[in-house]
Length: 190
Image 1: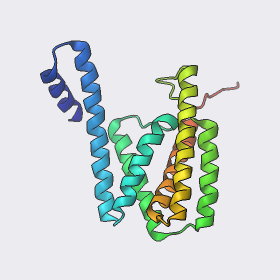
Image 2: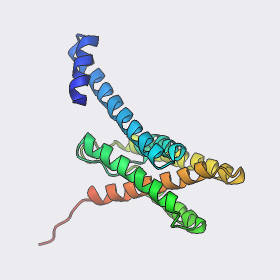
Image 3: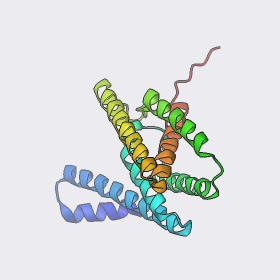
Image 4: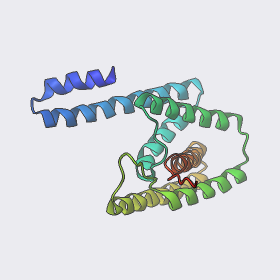
């Protein structure tokens, strides 16, 4: 359905086939991002965690492309997994099962995971060495920025920002580990 909308709109916008494909791809991505955003926002309203859900969405939106990680096989699976993971984060935050000290230790561990493994390369669209270095540098810069915001949020007692940053790093770190596992090179010994 989303692909069909993208195709119809791109056909109306331009006539050049190469431009149509580029516009269609961009529209397709835009529609999926908006669907993901609205699904997460609605979940946030239902959990009474609207600000948290939007912050997590935005933080992941900026960090995830550079850190890489697990990729679902289809866009709908990606959307469902994303919404599901943010809902799990809201549940864990709501029931407050993990102490703050433990959260900081987890945060530091997953910062190390992201710094060591990013970008997790997808074998379908492998990165060049130059791109890989750029993505690694950018993910480290974002992690540094998020850590700086974390310190500010603690100093100013902005708990929703503090928690969103911690959960974002946790989610992206788990995604990086899952991607490493999914895309590992398997060596078979006979």
